[in-house]
Length: 120
Ligand SMILES: [Zn+2]
Image (cartoon, rainbow, N blue to C red; front, top):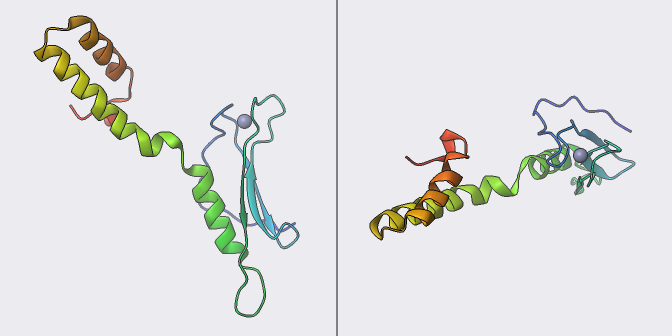
């Protein structure tokens, strides 16, 4: 198995927080990143199959790039801004309509998020 020097940092396993391993090479025809913590509830793995270069060799570097992007993309990256916007709208609506309990729930949820995610 080829061990490639990686310059892009891998995010920890989303389920257990442990550092994952990256493996790549011709014998696996691409690359994969996997959690190897035996106590992890999910032990997730991302795979990328290498495409063939014009000379018939496998493009392992491209597969490594793909698998790193897949592993480092989290569902929350894409969906969190829309969720924050919806909570802020609920909060404003509740304020206008004197629905204090609903507004309190939305504000409490927003307050639990990191400040950089909030719009105001
Ligand atoms: Zn894990």
